[in-house]
Image (cartoon, rainbow, N blue to C red; front, side, top):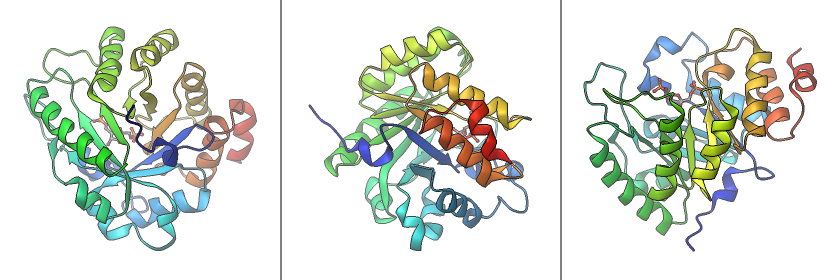
Length: 263
Ligand code: FBP
């Protein structure tokens, strides 16, 4: 059995990833004066001490992943896409596994738009990336995002299909979206088998407790963690939100109890 070293991305079997690839994926509309600076994000991860990994693109990794930040395991995304309109979505490989390792990667991240007319290209690139990463003992985290002209990315069956594709393609962890249906998430975890599931954060919620509740729900349904960006670094109190999330995701605390840390 091939077993990449997933453990280095986990704490007590749970995973809390701070995601900061939105500058490429969405553009700077997600940012303000503070969080436009990658240093601010790395500092949240370092000071809050709850994130089991940080995920970003290669350019950010090479220029900002230095000094004490190197204590936080790094996931380098090796493909990416912008939000400019596309008929057929594709996430193009923009970095080699070797370059990611030189930048300090402990794991490789890769997006697949399942169901896109360009799916075969992403599958092909992903297969090579998994092979290379595993040769170096690095686990692979796949952003499994069904997307394309005829794809309903929040449909239960589509989400379960994406989870299964992650297992079949050899991902160690898949990052998927949650449509609010806990039963379906349980089924997705069954479909993913020995591939672990983390849930995407999504747009910033108005209320921090709502996000803690959602985190609690997905953990209860069988995810091993969440990968969150905007709900942390767009918050006015990102350090407190991070600690409260850590309490829910890593320590299994109830959302209301964890919310005490928001003060
Ligand atoms: P957020 O918590 O900010 O949603 O980040 C999670 C994430 O998967 C990022 O890693 C990625 O940039 C983004 O969401 C992709 O979002 P979209 O669904 O708009 O492509």
